[in-house]
Length: 288
Image (cartoon, rainbow, N blue to C red; front, side, top):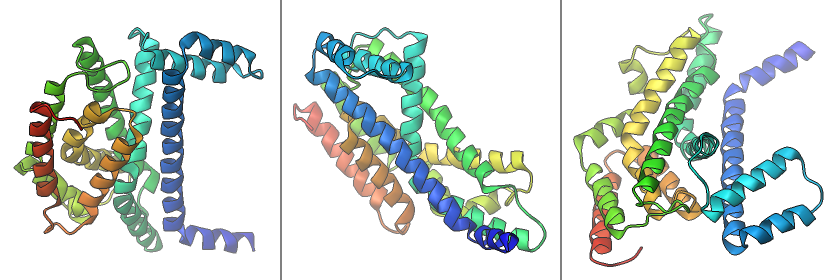
């Protein structure tokens, strides 16, 4: 009886994979929202008052106190770029990328799960879907490291405030225009085509893999194409605010739309034109 129940559950592997992806996205967004709430608390409460309220509150665990203290430091804008702060920012970027990009990768991951199920029924099982998904997220984790370094460099150049928002209209305008122009490039089209046709991507790169490292590498390769498609859009976070929830959600929804809508729809071109117009507007003295 137990064996039959297990077999029935395993036949629903796509449902299980989908639920796991949804849970991962949900937890990532919960973290983002917690961080934004911490930021808002820091901006509306003086640092001394926050520390006092933390001390007067009910006893907290050491980890909770540490998180609140780090949040206070981030919000107060008094942080040095120490190793600890760098790791904190890196984790922030990594979780944010997981929350933003997991939904757009879900179709490819679910296809992998479906093909894997069919291969298992034929006696030629593929590596577990988790290896492919991990490879994809590993690519975006690597991107998060680059983004963290970029944030550090922009803050050092005084182009980004400690609140992680652009401090220069010139910088904002140029980033908007650059992101808009990239939407019209052949490189954008080539990377996006791989994201829009996941099966074609797999067949073009040696097919599905039976060995775990091969599946991990395939997922990583797919993630690199996704980064090639979306890196300029992610740069817009430095314009609207790295922790601006509406800005984050808008970019995530657009990335998902780019991948799911029919290729014949000029979504990227239209968005590129809008970004270029916004960039010119900002350079002319307008505000977003």
